[in-house]
Image (cartoon, rainbow, N blue to C red; front, side, top):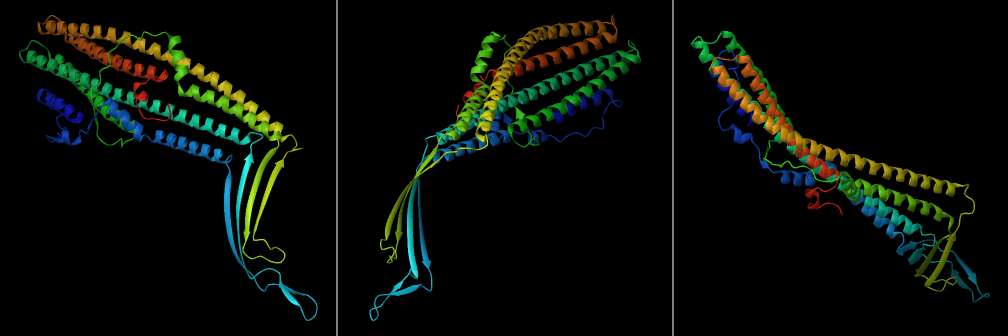
Length: 459
């Protein structure tokens, strides 16, 4: 669509400034804009699509589901284990021997050519050293960390989509500014040509106006390409084909000062940020790992019970059904200091996790402070940029009046046009810098409304 927009402007240039301008550009057939425009997507729809399709989120979700399976696996180790087995055995020849006095001998078989056996076993770990419960707790903390990583990923993707969406709007607004600049330059060229034809202006003014039009065309071409590039980035953030066409709906983010104390924002962020919660869980995980390592010094107990069936009774084993109960205990007496080494390793992990938690809180504080300052700075820029646009528009109007009256040089009008273009560009930058800064603040404090209403993780 943007290609057709620029083609229309260039066609106007050709009609006014031929043959010195780009008239050989191929024009698009009418109706092609609808064929290539793509669906119109709202910001909320873009975010929801990303939460469903983004591949980074998909990977984080699978890691979380895997951690839940590990919790069930560790928990199962502390539950009773029941098993059964059956066996059919054929052997031959079967050994025999003879017993009894002469004349009354009896042949006794040792075994049977066919034997059917079965067994049911029941075992239970007696978690005296709490290693099973500690291992389960460690897995649960690991699962919580993976869930927090999933939440962090989702929050980051929400911000990335917002940033990409605002950048599309920014690029489109700059394209509008570029088109306006070309149209303004074309109008000046028309007026200059009219004055030149009646002999009130020199040829130099016409040439200067044509140069300004050509320069503005270059900016327009770059702005057109930037729109397409930003749309591809948005598509990629959404987890969809970046080559597919897409259109975005206009979003207005009213610029307001952020009336919040930095200390208050930092406190909110430390309480809500998944990164901080994950770092805290890592500290707890390290402490449980220390207890787990120390548990190796405590005896390990287990109980086992079995009920056996032998379908072929013999003289040496007349009972078909037998049972057995055992209690096993094990205690390491000397292991070369390996247990102490593992305990020391776990303690070091706790220290590293605590340091990471402290650093995470510092990073959060920096994020929040930077976000607050960026919001307030961009808000002030929006206010001054709006005033500057109004002043630049008035300056251009006066310059055009003076030029048409013949009391000023064309350079005055050219400078005024350039100043207005810069003022409008600054306004666009300030407007979407504010929107991005506000989204960044909400990401920094984990107060994104889109995340609160999304179906994600175990918040």
